[in-house]
Length: 68
Image 1 (tube, rainbow, N blue to C red):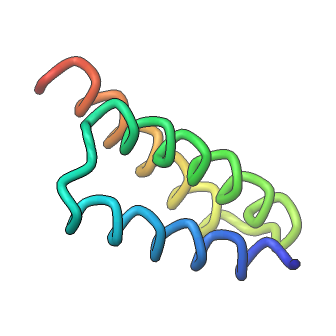
Image 2: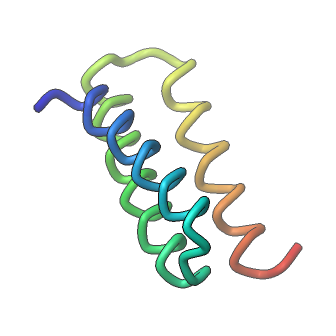
């Protein structure tokens, strides 16, 4: 599976978990995996836009984890 498909599948999984009321800890695990997959995609595609998107994901996850 290529990196873009992995990211899209992970996003779908996160949406399903969120809709089903999954515990926050389970969503955080999935979000971390999403960041790793997005990093792989960004490295493969190259360019600043992908890197910025990964950085945005990482910051959003950190904000969520510290409650702010």
